[in-house]
Image (cartoon, one colour):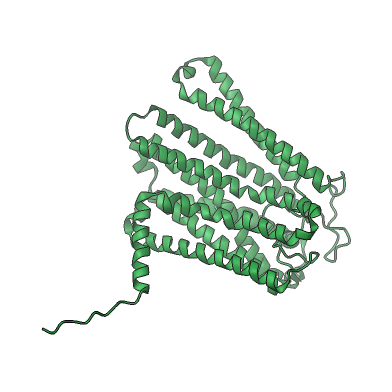
Length: 415
């Protein structure tokens, strides 16, 4: 998508790097990326088990030989993660860069029949409605009880719920609108795309912040009160917003410098790659995303290993330690679901080539995998697993259901 031809109607965007080297075909790129990811996964598991073995036995800490060895393992793991991330990201096909909110309806693909379009839009709207109700009741439960305001854990959780709700609403809205309007104003599309990218990039950083909070509460319980304060939590939310907003705003600034002012008055198909078309943006996002996901992955790995080490050494309150460990592990699953935005689009094109008759169905399934299914994880991790929040959330749901039901007026006995 970013390989815009030199004869584009908006001007010549050819760069020295463009067409300098031949690109792999879709099937070749898919094979190479799959092999690279599998090798990275196997080596990461091996390195992770070595680090866990080192952390579980204190006598390893007293031997310089093993300290240098584990340092080499961690160094190689970081290098492998960064190099593999850069390789896979740079190998993503031109139409599948991260942050590309292209919807399943492109101009070059056949459109669904009326019944198929109605079915897909109905399913998308129903899923959005169910998740919005769940998220709305969670926010209401949080707002109704003031003691949740005083716990950084629940502040970060509700921030993630609101972030996911905004992202889900934007993506579902863009999906449904694409069936009615093939093109919209570039200025309106810019606002929607930037907000969607901001919320998408916020999720992994929120996961890292929540993992650090669990790590402090388990490993430094005596210092938790002054390390995790409400003010610091609010500052952390602000930092996450700034870091998440930096990439889309730099995309906008580059586009403002490269494009004529009339571009934002034209009508385009609302797509990240059609809005931010300069090749520099592609390479910038590749570098940013590689560092970004590697940092979050290492934070989750470190906090998980430290909590697991604490669980092995603890003699009391093992239940809370195990819950914290499982929570961080589920954060890792969430991070992998977030990374589907990298993997799934690069697999979409070769799958469509293999099964062209199912191209629209493949795009629809990818839309569900990348943007819908990961939104189920937040309610499951805290809304269902956390006993305290589940208690008040259930009370609120029962209260709302009883208010909806009509009250029966029983006849009163005469006095």
